[in-house]
Image: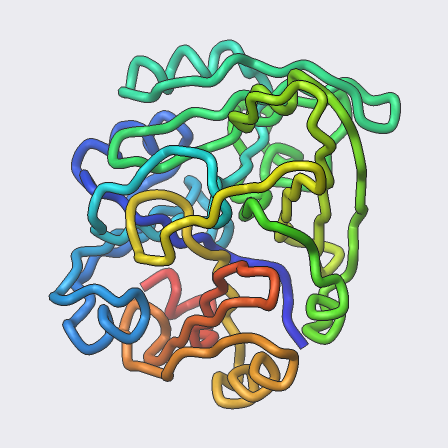
Length: 296
């Protein structure tokens, strides 16, 4: 069975420009490498070697972002990876800092879920990466709980736009439903980039009860365009390190996922593979490594 995503993979067409943007979020470069041609092809369908950089929040070993050099992709709304969620203590200050670092913000959406107020803003950063900042009157456990000087959290969710949610698939992997919420909210629709203010929105979240979430957003009344399956800039996949990669490969295939070949990658603990769920969500699996090795 799987734990929650530990990292997220984002394609980025300008790695150098993305560095100050991530620094404004409190992320620092932890490891850098080159994905060799065979691994680049197996994982992402890329034709040559690809530079990649792993960023982690200051003082943390999980909740990071792996940026992989990729062709520039479209920012139009379509099925596929959408962005990564992070908490902020001060959304206005965070948006200002990220705009100064080259980000392009959406309107800030203020809304309520279960009677609790939230504010969210999606920001497309340099290189085509999208971060959704979330400020709320209540939130789940994060790095913010142990450091009052920290403004931003670690990765909180890998967010995907989908045509529907196959809840049975996620149950087979051992991830629990956090909630499934239906709403019609014009400010949320505008935040995502949906033109129809009356569109029904369905939020489905899955996790292991502790870490980041897999968040699926679907629109039952809309014909969401199919995204380009090619690897390009933007959020791609949540990352699930596992102690037994071969067993995980068999588990995913048995649950109905399309699984790629296992390939070698030093940065990913030695071996890795990708998969796609029946609802079109990309996932990535790495060999689990010790905390000491991650620090190295």
